[in-house]
Image 1: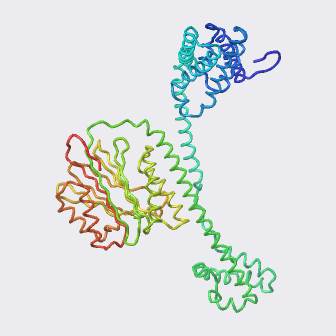
Image 2: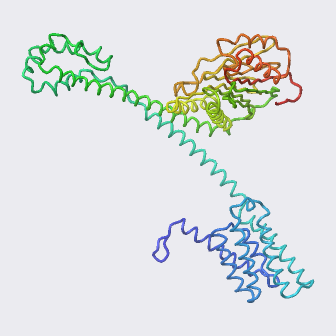
Length: 534
């Protein structure tokens, strides 16, 4: 757009026109006066959000006040407008500003304050009180209607929809970018191990270059020299250094620089082994980074899709949950952490056992529990959540040498299906109709498991009148848990709290508190038209 040979871009032109509109609106609003008062201008200023719009309307209102009113009423009107602008600017970042009543109340309050000050100075009478009340009420009411006009309520909905679509698109592109970045870490094809012959080539280049027997060793007796080096290679690489006994006696006796050659060979052996170690470590880190970026992309995609997942309908299973723990003898805090929570129709039970006992173990288990809970509550499915958490703990384990177990139950109370995930956790037991089923996993604890390992799920249906018991290895481990199965088989009660306490007491009697012990029990009672959560 050109005006007087000056090019104006569209955003700047639109902003200029918009601010000009607010100035004109403020100017003519001040002209809509009532007995020397301008409640419309007060309502307009209060309806504008603090910033350029409100400042433009204020400038127009001040100019209109002096244009349409005499000097005294103009000063009074300007005082009201400036007071409104100052109050809204001061409170724009507070929770009060977001309340629907705040701006009309500010317009009415400013009008009342200034009008009352003038009325007290000039003297109060019934006519002045009536005019003051009318101006105050009109300022608040007109602010409400000006806000409706300025906001144009149909536009924000369309804008919100566009913003939501834009956010989904950005999330989708971010997820794809993260996955592509992960794929970029994958090598195009596996590289072959470096040929060990480079050891002897480089050592001979240093030692044999100026040797008087060079022609004999590397031309006339080349085959013998090659075989000598070839025979010495396996044991030399296995040991990590070369020794004189690795070489044939006829070669070592003939070589006039054998000590120097042996030293040069050891230098090259060390360099070769370091290069191999570096390449293996680089490949490992590349694979780890590739898995992490892929998992992050999957997490973003899951987070984007989670709100769109249709909610399941149907009758939910009733459930009661009880948990209990006790620290190892001599410790004040238990190193185990556990919790349960709902996300829609899903019920999650988590038990994490930190390495060792005491505060450090509890810190590790609580961190694991908190991160996993945040993932699940954000709508992330258990599999990608566990993969991402395991990858993070894998890095942490490299630095601190610590790890934690994870025992996660994901129970859909509507479809009556459950999945059990175990990273190094103790067995879980299900009692149904007098029969006890033992569920055990084979995965290592989180932090020791491979970073890109897929979580293994044990799936089973949920039924009424069922107990499910999760324990830490301080209660019983996979090699000594027969007593837990017998205790459950003989259990005739219906209170999961009593069962949890009984398991912890029996574990202490058997093991004398040699480790932290925790138990988490889920009971699915017969439907009693309600549920009790403990």
